[in-house]
Length: 93
Image (cartoon, rainbow, N blue to C red; front, top):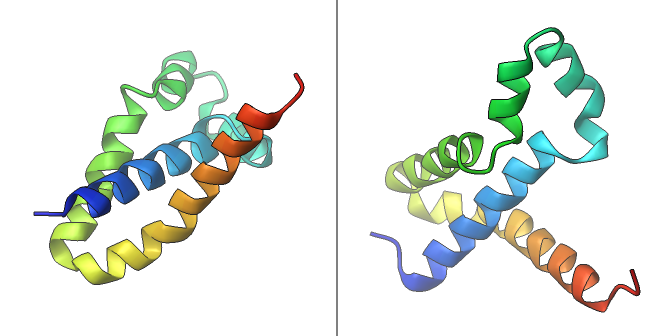
Protein backbone atom coordinates (compact mmCIF):
# COMPACT_ATOMS: atom_id res chain seq x y z
CA UNK A 1 0.00 0.00 0.00
CA UNK A 2 1.49 3.36 -0.99
CA UNK A 3 1.96 6.05 1.61
CA UNK A 4 0.02 9.29 1.22
CA UNK A 5 3.07 10.93 -0.38
CA UNK A 6 3.49 8.05 -2.83
CA UNK A 7 -0.22 8.09 -3.69
CA UNK A 8 -0.09 11.82 -4.50
CA UNK A 9 3.08 11.29 -6.51
CA UNK A 10 1.42 8.48 -8.50
CA UNK A 11 -1.70 10.57 -9.05
CA UNK A 12 0.32 13.51 -10.38
CA UNK A 13 2.35 11.20 -12.61
CA UNK A 14 -0.81 9.54 -13.93
CA UNK A 15 -2.34 12.93 -14.74
CA UNK A 16 0.83 14.09 -16.49
CA UNK A 17 1.16 10.92 -18.59
CA UNK A 18 -2.53 11.08 -19.56
CA UNK A 19 -2.14 14.75 -20.49
CA UNK A 20 0.98 13.97 -22.53
CA UNK A 21 -0.82 11.22 -24.46
CA UNK A 22 -4.18 12.95 -24.85
CA UNK A 23 -3.60 16.67 -25.17
CA UNK A 24 0.01 17.77 -25.60
CA UNK A 25 1.02 19.20 -28.96
CA UNK A 26 4.12 17.00 -29.16
CA UNK A 27 1.94 13.89 -29.47
CA UNK A 28 -0.50 15.34 -32.02
CA UNK A 29 0.96 13.48 -34.99
CA UNK A 30 1.07 9.97 -33.44
CA UNK A 31 -2.34 10.54 -31.83
CA UNK A 32 -3.84 11.52 -35.22
CA UNK A 33 -2.18 8.51 -36.87
CA UNK A 34 -3.57 6.06 -34.31
CA UNK A 35 -7.06 7.57 -34.22
CA UNK A 36 -7.53 8.45 -37.90
CA UNK A 37 -11.14 7.63 -38.76
CA UNK A 38 -11.77 6.32 -35.25
CA UNK A 39 -13.64 9.11 -33.51
CA UNK A 40 -14.61 6.93 -30.52
CA UNK A 41 -10.98 5.99 -29.92
CA UNK A 42 -9.97 9.66 -29.95
CA UNK A 43 -12.83 10.42 -27.56
CA UNK A 44 -11.59 7.61 -25.27
CA UNK A 45 -7.98 8.84 -25.33
CA UNK A 46 -8.93 12.44 -24.61
CA UNK A 47 -11.27 11.50 -21.74
CA UNK A 48 -9.59 11.87 -18.32
CA UNK A 49 -12.14 9.48 -16.80
CA UNK A 50 -11.60 6.79 -19.46
CA UNK A 51 -7.95 6.81 -20.52
CA UNK A 52 -6.97 8.42 -17.24
CA UNK A 53 -8.21 5.37 -15.36
CA UNK A 54 -6.05 3.02 -17.41
CA UNK A 55 -2.98 5.21 -17.06
CA UNK A 56 -3.54 5.34 -13.29
CA UNK A 57 -4.03 1.57 -13.20
CA UNK A 58 -0.69 1.10 -14.96
CA UNK A 59 1.06 3.26 -12.33
CA UNK A 60 -0.60 1.36 -9.48
CA UNK A 61 0.29 -2.00 -11.04
CA UNK A 62 3.89 -0.86 -11.49
CA UNK A 63 3.94 0.23 -7.84
CA UNK A 64 2.67 -3.20 -6.79
CA UNK A 65 5.50 -4.86 -8.71
CA UNK A 66 8.30 -2.56 -7.55
CA UNK A 67 7.32 0.41 -5.42
CA UNK A 68 10.77 1.99 -5.16
CA UNK A 69 11.42 1.93 -8.91
CA UNK A 70 7.93 3.24 -9.66
CA UNK A 71 8.29 6.16 -7.25
CA UNK A 72 11.56 7.15 -8.93
CA UNK A 73 9.97 6.77 -12.39
CA UNK A 74 6.91 8.82 -11.34
CA UNK A 75 8.94 11.63 -9.79
CA UNK A 76 9.84 13.55 -12.99
CA UNK A 77 6.24 13.34 -14.24
CA UNK A 78 4.90 14.56 -10.89
CA UNK A 79 7.38 17.43 -10.72
CA UNK A 80 6.47 18.38 -14.29
CA UNK A 81 2.78 18.39 -13.28
CA UNK A 82 3.71 20.82 -10.52
CA UNK A 83 5.57 23.03 -13.00
CA UNK A 84 2.48 23.10 -15.24
CA UNK A 85 0.23 23.96 -12.29
CA UNK A 86 2.58 26.74 -11.19
CA UNK A 87 2.72 28.16 -14.71
CA UNK A 88 -1.08 28.17 -14.96
CA UNK A 89 -1.44 29.93 -11.62
CA UNK A 90 1.14 32.59 -12.44
CA UNK A 91 0.20 33.09 -16.11
CA UNK A 92 -1.28 36.41 -17.21
CA UNK A 93 -3.77 34.69 -19.53
